Structure formats: C-alpha cells, structure tokens
Image 1: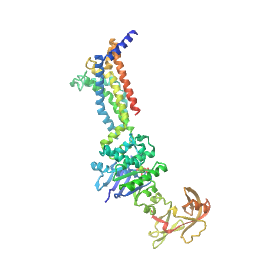
Image 2 (image 1 turned 180 degrees about the horizontal axis):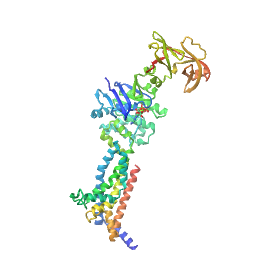
Image 3 (image 1 turned 120 degrees about the vertical axis):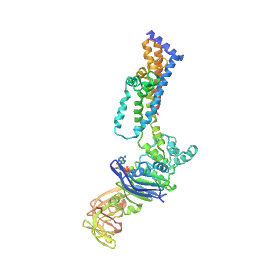
Image 4 (image 1 turned 60 degrees about the vertical axis):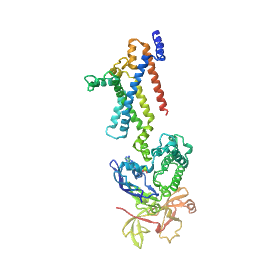
Length: 228
Length: 360
Ligand SMILES: Nc1ncnc2c1ncn2[C@@H]1O[C@H](COP(=O)(O)OP(=O)(O)OP(=O)(O)O)[C@@H](O)[C@H]1O
Ligand SMILES: [Mg+2]
C-alpha cells in the first residue's frame, strides 16, 4: 500500500515538474493520434458524404458492415498491418514496420469505421429537403454540401472526438506495429503496460493520469457539442 | 415574350408517369395559379420549373434559353428564381442568417446584406425574431421565413408551393395577404401551386388545372370556373351538380337534354344524340315553395334530402329525380322554412348550365 502511495506522489511530481520523459511520451502519443485521425477524417468525411448521397444496391449491408467494424479488436488491426508491412508482406519493401508511420496507418484504419459510420448517420439526421431548399435559393453544389455539413456539424464533431479517444488510448496497434521502442515509438498506453510490468509505478501512474485527463477533456468537449 | 416555357415536359418516378406532356407558357409579370387535387403532380412540376430535378423528357426554356439539361445554364437560371417549398425547412441558424443566406451565396456581403434583409424581415413581420434560432419558430413564422428568404432575392420568377397549406385560417389569410402584397408591389412573375381553388382565384391572373399529371385546362380564372373543360375539372372547381344526359333536340344553340326523363334546357352547340353532362353551380339554383317561376324552363320539384349549414350559407340537397344541390343564405332558408322532407321547387336558367361532352 505504501508503495502505491509513494508512486502516486512521485507521479504527481513528474507531471508538475514537466518531466522530460513523461512529456515526450505524451507528446508523441498526441502527435500520432492526431495525425492518424486527420488522415482518416480526410478520407472518411467526404466518403461518408458520398455514400450518404448516392443510392446503390447493397448500401444497407455496407453501412451495417461499417458499424460492425466500430468494435473491431485493436490487435486484429495490429495483426493486419503487421502482415502488410512485415518483410514478407506486400508492403514489406517500404521498411515501415516498427515506425511511427506504421502506428499512424494502423490507428487510421482503426478509427476509419467509426468516422465513416458516424458521418453517414450524422448526415442521415439532416432533413432530405434541406439540400433542395439551399439549391432553390441559389446555392451551387459546393455551397449546398457546406450547408448540409454545417447542419450536421455537431454530430460530425462528436464522431471525430470519439475517434480521437479510441486512437489515443489503444494498445494493440501501437505495440504490434510500433514495437514500443524507447524514444521512438513508445506512447502512453504502451509505456504504461511496460513500466507497470517493470515495477515503475510512478511513471505508469503519471501517464495514466494524463490519459485520464485527456479523456476528461474529450468528454467535456462531447457534452458541450451535444448541448449545441 | 415568355419568361418560362415547357414543351412536352414529362416526369417519372421509377416506372410511374407523374407528369405527361405538360406545355405551359408564362409571361413576365403574370401570376399563375397551378391548381389540382392532391397527388396531381403540382410539386413535381414546380421542382422541374425550379430546375431541381431533370425531366424524363421534354424541354424547358427560361428567358428563351434551353435549360432542360445543360448544368451551367441551369445554375445561372436558378439564381434568377426562388422557390418556396411545400414543406418549409429552415437552416439551424438565426432568422436573419436564414433570410440572408441566398444573398450570401450570390456574393452580397456586409452592409449591403443588412440593408436588404432588414426591410424584408419588417415586411413579413419577423423583425422581433431577427436573432432567434429559426428552429424555434412556430409553423406560421417558419412559413414567413421561407417566403422572406425567397423575396429578399428579388427573383424574376417566384415559385410558391401551397404557401398557406397546413396553417390555421388566421395565419393562412395573413400569409395570403402577404403574398398579395408582394404580387402587387413587385413586378416579379409568380407561379403558385394550391389545391385551394378560391385561394388561386383571389391571387392569380390565370389558372392552370393539373389533373393526374396532365395539364387539362389553362385560362382566366373566371373562364375555368364558368366553363370547366371536363367532368374532373368541373368537380374540382366546384360545379357540384353534374347531371348526365343525352341531347334530344337542339335549336339555334338552345339544346334540350334528357336527364333520366327530366328535361333540362341549356346553351350548347352539341348535336342531337350527344352524351353530355349538364353542370350547374349550386349558387345558381333558386329554391321556392310554390312553382311561381313557371317562366323558367328548368324548374323541378322534389323533396329536400338534406340541409347542411356552411357558415352564412345553407347547402340544400333536393331529390328531383337526380340530386340537385343548392346554396341559399341562412336567412332565406329560415324564411322558406327549408327542412328535410319538405317539397320545394328548384329552378335555374338555361344560361347557368354549362354543357360538357362525355368522353370515350
Ligand atoms: N420521390 C418520389 N418518388 C416516388 N413517387 C413520388 C415522389 N414524389 C412524388 N411522387 C408521386 O408523384 C405524384 C405527384 O406528387 P406531387 O407531390 O407532385 O403531387 P402534388 O400535386 O404536389 O400533391 P399535394 O397537393 O398533395 O402536394 C404522387 O402520386 C406522388 O406519390
Ligand atoms: Mg405538393
């Protein structure tokens, strides 16, 4: 018990003193998560808009499939990207395995279904006559898309925030394709799992607290968004 | 000079023909009412005129330019019109922003925007709600936002789809006054769909009757009411008495119609043997207790089958071998003691009868 107590005190010290190792790991986590999120959003938001706007056969099945992938285990994505990037894999020649880039790819794939699916449902919440109303008042195609997106902005933002939460807190992809290399691919969740095993409770708890703090901010943000 | 013209316009949804061969010409400055029962295709036609949908076939000209398909011309033409949809949808922003958006899309900014939007908000009586979120407005207020959004653009062509439907009578008449004011003040051309024929009659110069996807009659309001072109139109424009019969004699424009043994005289040029409908508007039927109007040829006695009150009027159905509906004021109904079962004489002039040929 004493050990835990001391670890906690030391963890707080690490945070308030802006300990270099803690800050570096937290910073790397944020950069990787934001990059993968940005990448996924760049593809998934317009794609979601397209899927929403078009009528085609199998659309319902596709949406169900996307929704199923919301809860795909992180290690499955990790395994998939590992196989893709490993020496013998189709993209093995790029030498990307155990790099931050590999982690970005993995996390982008991980959050893509959430972004895509929630964008589609955000857009289907918008009145179908809204685009026609905009066009009837003289909006061109681009202006009309903006109107629809703006109308769904709260739901789309909620999707982005949720996806960010999943990216920054996952372990499976980070450890399998990042490798938890000190100073290179070590991020908060992987550092916590390693340091706890090694017995460095202070560092684990400091990183855990930062993760919790980020989760708190995310939740706060989500609530603000949902209240409009 | 025509502002908008359709040539053989057709529209389909899936395999269903919704509009068939619609030919319509509208002059600048004219107000046209598009009337027809629900499901006739009014909204479908307005959506085509506003270039929201592409027609299945046929051509559409706006200001003499072909805008049937070419997308660049369509966007330009659409910016010269405004369409108030049947179901008004407001954007999730302030009333002011809702009314300003069309101008913003046309590149109007800053002070110019304000000087245009504020007076329009005043006109529609929404100045007090200027900064409220438009989603919090009542149905009538929402409808006014939708109209304001359109008229602030000063469109050359204003399309209105049932602007007073789904509103209580007071709000509806306010909106109607607003539209009448706009029509008077601005020189813009208006096409307005409505299934309320009296509404169309009050506001429009000309009417187009749409039945089952076909434009069955276009003309001055009073002509359509006086001489509907078919049985469907006659029913729709309120000629409640539509009596089937055969012309048995005609003499210099005056025809005698045999309606199940009773003879009706009417003005008509159809030849003997022609199967026709004789249409008489209920307000043109005179009821009396004694058959004093012997001079009138079309005089029939019968029992009152029903009496129904309609505001200041009474709707009285008399069974004269065929049912005949008359509209009389409450006062004269009281004086004549018109009650169910009483025998009365119903009379109308030969000139009040409009004869339609039976089709097929
Ligand atoms: N998107 C659509 N898909 C299939 N059928 C449609 C569609 N829109 C309209 N219809 C059909 O087309 C016909 C004409 O519809 P429309 O809305 O033009 O009628 P309307 O004259 O405006 O009627 P109302 O007075 O009720 O508004 C109706 O039978 C309707 O069911
Ligand atoms: Mg309609």
